[in-house]
Amino acid sequence: MQEPRPNSPGSDAGIDEDLIATLVDRFYAAVRQDALIGPVFEARVDDWDEHLTKLAAFWSSVVLKSGRYRGSPMPVHVAIDEISSAHFARWLQLFAETARAVCPPDAAALFIDRSQRIGESLQLGISLNRGDGIAFERPRRTP
Ligand code: HEM
Image (tube, rainbow, N blue to C red; front, side, top):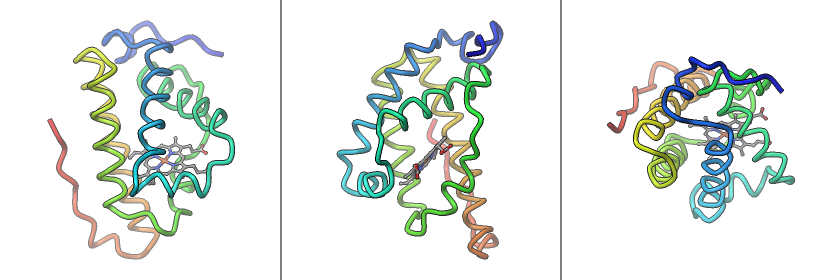
C-alpha cells in the first residue's frame, strides 16, 4: 500500500484511512436500505466486503492521493442500464448526509465537493454513451 501524500487535500482537512473506512461503511449501510438505489446495488454486488474495501481505496486515492485504487468507474456505471439522474441525485444526497454526520466540517466539504464533481463526470459519460449528451444538464451543487 502506498502512503498518503502529506500535502494531499484530504490530509490538510484531517482525513485519514480510518475516517474513510467509517464514511464508506456508514454510507453503504444507508445505500442498502434506500428504496431507490438499494436495489441497483443488491442486484450487482455479491461480496459487500470486497465492494467496501474497493470504495475505501477509491476515496483514499481521490482525497489522499494514495494511488490505492486502480479501477475505472466509468465503464462500470455506463453498464448499469437502469441508472438515471434520479439515482445520482439520491446517491449524492445520501453521501452528503453521511459525510456531514461522520466527518469534521472541512473533511465533509471536501468529500462532498469531490463526490459532486465525479458524479457530474459519470453522468456526462453515461449521457454521451447513450447518445443524448446534448441533453445533459449540469446538476446544481449543494453548498
Ligand atoms: C455519484 C458518485 C458515484 C461515485 C463516486 C461512484 C463510485 C463507484 C466506484 C469507484 C465503484 C467501483 C468501480 C470498480 O469496480 O472499480 C462503483 C461501483 C458501483 N456503483 Fe457507483 N458511484 C457513484 C454513483 C453511483 C450511482 C448513482 C449508482 C446507482 C444507483 C451506483 C452504482 C454502483 C454499483 C451497482 C457498483 C458496483 C458494480 C459492480 O460491482 O458490478 N454508483 N461506484
